[in-house]
Image (tube, rainbow, N blue to C red; front, side, top):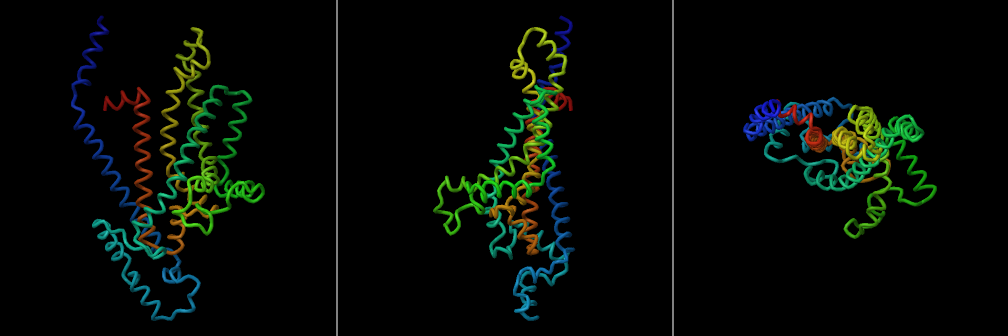
Length: 348
């Protein structure tokens, strides 16, 4: 009874404490960190682009460098503001960004906002399918390996995960391309839609057919870390005292996994899955190059090779917000699934 009274007294401030200001302060702190991160990414990206040995005018002209004279080069440089000092160009870009203007893309000759909107929608389907498949398959394999730790299933899954973890994305993509597109001819070789077809006239099945192999490439690469981390979390949970007590009471392995292990393993897996959005985007850049998939990753490569500073800076900022949001969502889900983390947050 004394313990119940102590628990009631201890829990009372937690129930009556105002939660609004605390959550508002936490959100404000995360937004401030995001703004600082965006400023650092923008400054670093602009500095790297300015130090690049590639001449922006030569990159803009392409293969017709010898066909233009000094006057045409001066006009091109004047049009894109390349004659201004780097700090002045960065200040002008930053001022336009505050007004909501991301600039004009020299590579695509379109507003940067339109380029990112169109390319991201193409990449979103690819990354979403790969993200879901890698999470589900990786978590399932890690669960099986952790429950069957030391047995043949664990050894096979662990060996396969380590092999995939050490394999570059472009290498996996080239192998799949050779196997399924060149040898078996089951999947298209390139592109997001059939060659010579207007995108608006392509049906859903054709889009999925072209999406299959790039998504499979990203999924296979993303399975390994989820499977290995889930295996470790499940193995630790299976060796815990509460699982041993439940096993002593006669509960079967399936009941142990469902009632005691699954929730403890899901938190770290979700945190890692949402934290892997940066690696997912980096892998999509390579996968889109291998399969000539016209998404945001291919636009990033074109912007870097063409010294398209406004487009590259906008992609860097957009990717930063994308990855940062994923990390925050993973942190929130991990806190919601883990009671100990919730108690620590409440104590803070």
